[in-house]
Amino acid sequence: MYKDFEKNVSDDENASIFFEPTCKVILKPKNGYYPKYNEFCMKLVRNLGAHSKDRRIYKPNPERCKNLYKWLYYLIMKHKIPDDIIKEIFQKSKDIVDADGNENMCSYNKYSEFLEEPYEMLKISHFDDITNNIKGILMDNEHKSNCSCRSYIYDCVRMYNEMNRKYCSTDDDRDNKYNITCSQLNLFKYAYDTYYKSNQDLKDKIPSLDKPTFDHNFNCSSSKSDKELEDVKNEQGSSSTLPTAIGTMAGVSSVLAFLYKLHTNFNLII
Image 1 (tube, helix red, strand yellow):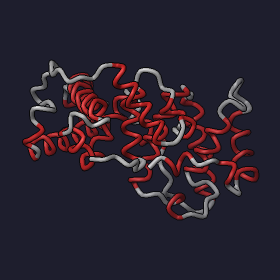
Image 2 (cartoon, one colour):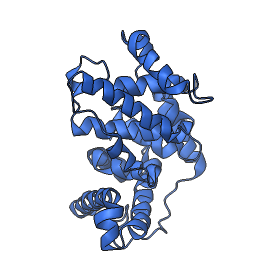
Image 3 (cartoon, one colour):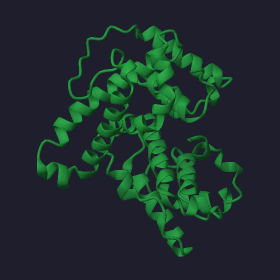
Image 4 (tube, helix red, strand yellow):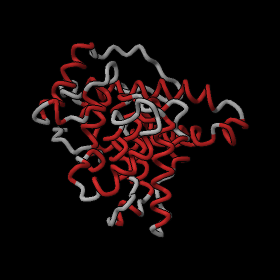
């Protein structure tokens, strides 16, 4: 899912003609931003469809935009990219796309609505995408990704309950102030409850969303998590081919690498 967004921008015929000049205009007036964020800027301009002849890119469907936002969250967490850059890249790209007669570009407003707690929203929003891939991993205690998978599930349940209390406790929060956040949490609740109820054989392995208990003693030591991350890197051939947004993110590497692994069609034996 992310390989398309991560492609080397220098391979694109538009790189030197359009992407680089556009990014210089955006970054050079800002002290210290150029060339530090130039590669990121050119990738985002390309991925938003500016100067693209590919209908799939310049007229993206909602699924592509959702995946683009997730890709962005990874990079933000790794590189601490300032939001003013991202906002301006979206605006410049929109100006170009609109001038070309296209009006379907992924929206900065939709992207920014997830910024309350982007890491938490990123993890939660992945759940419905991977439900078909994780049952075999959860059922097999010896599976090399079992630890990361169960850690991910428990994290999602914990974060859902914390964020639901924090952002969605009143009608005003749900309907106005945090409408998008609460809508995403509701989507997660529906997906999780459906999965939990339809997989009775997993009930002793994953917690209930409404009455979670977090005292399950599954063997998820930090050394085991680190080993799983190394397995992800090794399957790619070398750590250099794992996007830097995943490969060097201290503290969250194992779970995010696990999600990345599922989304890029690695050869999981489940």
